[in-house]
Length: 135
Image (tube, rainbow, N blue to C red):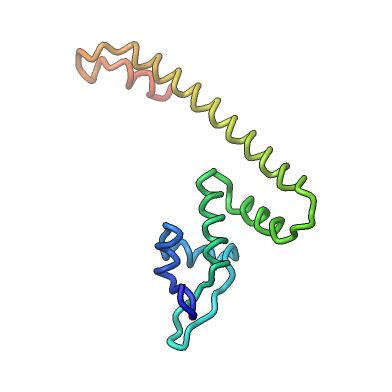
């Protein structure tokens, strides 16, 4: 990184994200509004890159933007007990486990529907479409 910092495109490449995403995170307050160069380009420092990478990692783990906001606020107070972080993580884990159960039930149902089809016949006799159709 040079003395004036990273331009938004450089930051996007370094964090493997899109420029529009960075602008959105700034708009909703997840990233602080950056300084500007003499040419009026946004300039970012190493702390902004680290924060953006943290946000991206949290998104990759499925945390919501609100949860990420809370985690960022908590991380700024290093002397604070980590019980709140534990609670956010435990709640997220419970949501993930519920989604896994739902997806496993969905997979079972799709296997059941698919097993009723032998692949022959016409659409008018398709048991998969019959099973999916409402009522």
